[in-house]
Length: 155
Image (cartoon, rainbow, N blue to C red):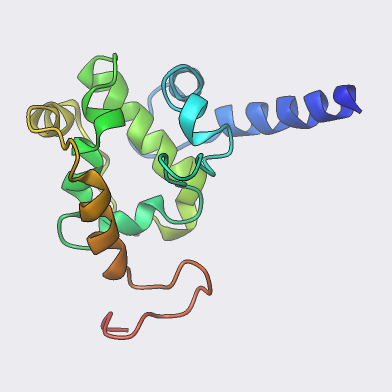
């Protein structure tokens, strides 16, 4: 059983590493950075570790569709305090969006740049990140549980 589980994990890892995405020069490096800097808390499949580390799979790109959401992703503690240079962090964030929520990536998506990450990292969220996340999620254009348009979202 352990061998089968390991093979499944290896297959998923290889598939994730191969994702081609806007703003991702080196998908293998981005995936390695995910493994080293993110998946310990967010898990390999981005499902998170409740209650403290939120899931990103299936909804992280929805932040790009609400006012303040794009900036929010540059200022959350795990991003703002990551031990990566700005260019690799931008690549990792672009890879994460495409890999774990490509379905919600806007058609006109502009990849994050090193400069944008640098600016966000200068003003990291601390304790307020959870409340800001909740407020932004209320503005999402779709209910991530049902896939239906949210009331008042303009759809």
